Length: 249
Image 1 (cartoon, rainbow, N blue to C red):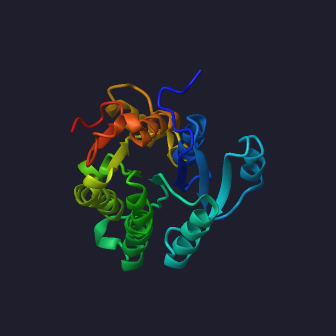
Image 2 (cartoon, helix red, strand yellow; image 1 turned 90 degrees about the vertical axis):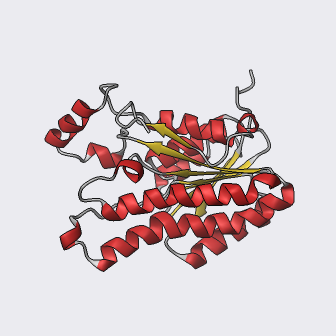
Image 3 (cartoon, rainbow, N blue to C red; image 1 turned 180 degrees about the horizontal axis):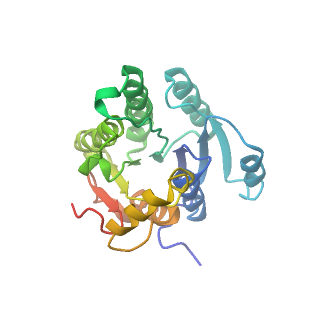
């Protein structure tokens, strides 16, 4: 049976693919038929072992999105091996939370460098090969706080809100070339990061979510697979919110 959003023959790169939403997204794209490059800062034995089960349609790509040289080398390696890139998923991100009055410059700048400048450099690098093919899908993982803000996360919210605004601008620039640029904005999702929250914080968050639960990484990944598909060819410059109703925007 073919996948409802068939990505057979497409080449995808997912950053931050070692765990959480990135890993779920990479596996979902693979499940839809794509050849997937798992962009990671460091290889783990678990990830290497997982590659063996991907029927030759997946490989690990060393990529540090906070490092311009690493991005250039990683994308060039991908293009030399596959000759094309059809799907880019900007997922890698970091948090360095703190109230504004105490936030150090480096805590602000490092979050912007990883979460916003990294995706900018990746987009810039993949656009030329996509324009040549007259086809491309760029999807960036933002966050509900990029729309609503969140105390203690001025740096993170700025980076995620910036992703949305940048994606809209690039969408307008390349729409006539068959390239779409969209965003998926998760709310609270069951990942290693949210599992580390204290019970009190988790309960407080759950009380605010109309769906009454945290989301699953696979639910975020499903939105990405749709946006990566040919069926979503008329959707560009948009943000799909996957947040259980915590913010209706």
